Image 1: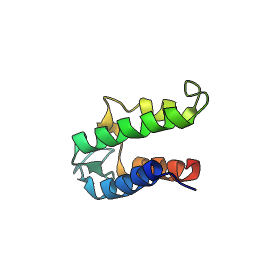
Image 2: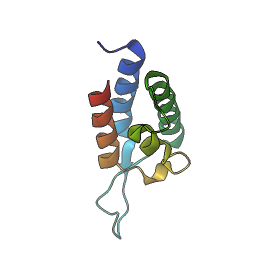
Image 3: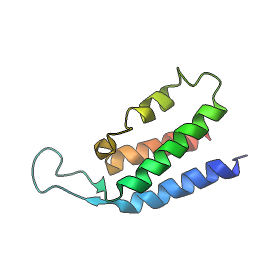
Image 4: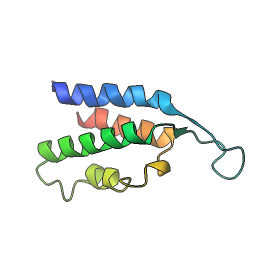
Length: 94
C-alpha cells in the first residue's frame, strides 16, 4: 500500500508533466519539451530524493537516488520523456 507521501509525490509529478511546454525551434533538442518551472521541479526533486533516502536501506548505492541526484542543479537537462521515465520508475518503486 502506498503511503500518503508517495501518493503526493506521484500526483505532484503527474501535475508537473503539464509544465513541460518549452521547445526549441532548431538543433538536436527541437523534438524535446522542457519545464517552464524550475522552482517547482526543484522542490519536487528534493522531496522525492529525501523520501527515497528514508525508505531505502542503502541510499548511497541506490541507482534511482544516484540518478535523481545527477539532476540537482541541472534541471534543464530533464525533458518531458525523461521525466515520464522517472515517474514510471517511481511508480514501480512505490
